[in-house]
Image 1 (tube, rainbow, N blue to C red):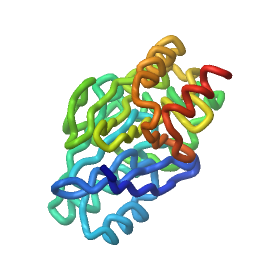
Image 2: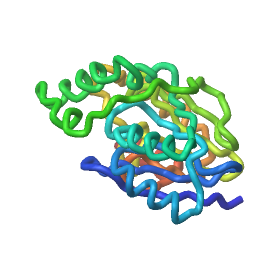
Image 3: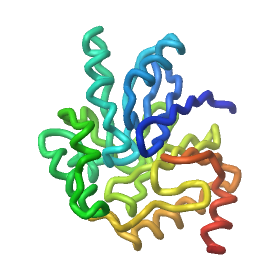
Amino acid sequence: MKKSLERIVVGAIATNCYLIPAEDGVLVLDPGDEAPRIIEKLDAMGSVPQAILMTHGHYDHLAGLPSLLAHYAAQNIHPEVLIHRADACFLGRDAYRFHCRSFAAVTGGDTSFVDALWDELPEPSRILEDGDRVGTWTVLHLPGHSEGSSAFYDEQAGILISGDTLFEGAVGRTDLPESNPRDLKESLDRLWKLPAATKVYPGHGEATSIGREMRYVNSD
């Protein structure tokens, strides 16, 4: 089964935002920045967001969320905002503190990236757990890069949207306050059980496959 999936690379850290046609609109995954470009692409698709999903809560994956929601709210369109329970702290009233803590840990205290883009973030409208379904997609909770890192897996289509857990030729960093190397290893071990032909669409960089990355990681 073929599944249409559009990628838009957004923001200073080149985050992959994915747009996937769904039954009643489009699923938007990781609107990391540049909401006008995302909206332009949705318009070209002749659709609107049905739901906005986050693979995890880091700011480079959701900074475009407030502008995206405001644009559609003006049209009385209110897509759900979905994130795993363990990363829900990156949305809502205390989000600024958590984002600053995360960036400060790797920049020596510099939070200018967050401050330059900051807009108040909404509370999630739906909390995700491992095994939940969003249309044809199954939520796989993959802690390690963050406590609530998750992938979205369509078994029939053979597609995994991996967020920052797995990239082409690399795995997610684990030097952040909410990271855990042991958890990441266990999450990768879970991914290696998927079919080798599974196409992987990561949070940054180009698409790859489970088979290729299993060989790369295990030989690194």
